[in-house]
Image (tube, rainbow, N blue to C red):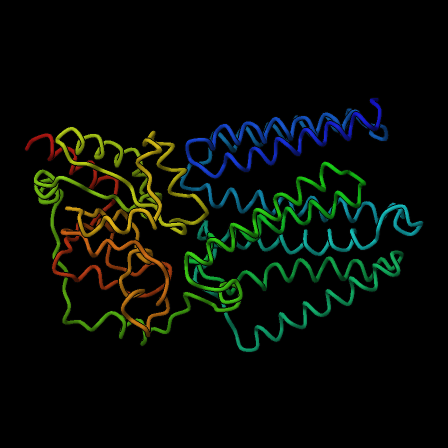
Length: 462
């Protein structure tokens, strides 16, 4: 046991490390240091909590820590970087589920009836935690392709969700005023779980980065509520930081798509009518110019500068190491090469940065959209690697396009555009890309990894 003041000082030290960790996570170069600082802060907070009075069942806690650590270690080793968005979605869900379970345990203990635990915190922990749990499971299922990634919509959907929401709010009020109403609390938890499903199924795959960020914020808010339930200031602080940073990141990503959060959550973006999609494609008279990796190598050999635009196709093909080899080959023959990063490329915030960092691509080669866009007109080759919606010029020129107004990477302004894709199928937004049909665009169809490795081998022979 340690004095209460020592526990609070430990929580304060942990909070400082959390804040410094978040600050360092703002840069790819300092992110590993920030992650380590936050991890040390969490370790301090956990140890302080275990040493404070009231924790009596240490064998059970040690067993839980051991089991959780073993599961986490196996997942960390076996999960591919391409599956990291699914992993993040699951972790968000587990955090929300844990918060709901803690709130339920405290209510069942009867501590809220006597006033020692705020009943408002219990109902908020249950509501937010329940929504986060099932919502994250749906996000995982969409990303893992266990269910269709396109929005699932039906007539009267928003009205039904509104009724569920009003019902949950009413039950929150009832349980907060009368914590001994266990049937009402059970109904609240049930509605929260249903809401998590019904709120996420109408959101399409193109919006998954925003959804993951928002669910991460929800998990933080649920943890904050749990901190009030347990009277744990460390949990309140850490939950608040996660909740606030998640909301800020969600806003940044919505701005990057030129859409409001309301539109993301309720717009069913990606449920594009087949007729409209055909019209957007411009009709059957358009054709693309298909080239081989050898042709692409010849183009690169005469270039002086290149910008690579990675997308989800790079993640699927696990082509990040191959693209690093291409970068090294290009720079060996004097081609200045950099990577253009769109804020919502991939399926989670920072997805492309994580994959390229794993392949040991230098941090100073990764350039954000606003900084790199003015350089495309002076670039000899823009290589689009599995990206689609974030390079679609319809966002600038076609007012009828669902993505009109979305900031994009201006790859079409480069002297030569090279697009590597498996097929001409549209991306998650469900619309065709006019970039594929431009006179300065050459398509190299195939698996991104194999195509890039083919270009590297051809460059060696030139």
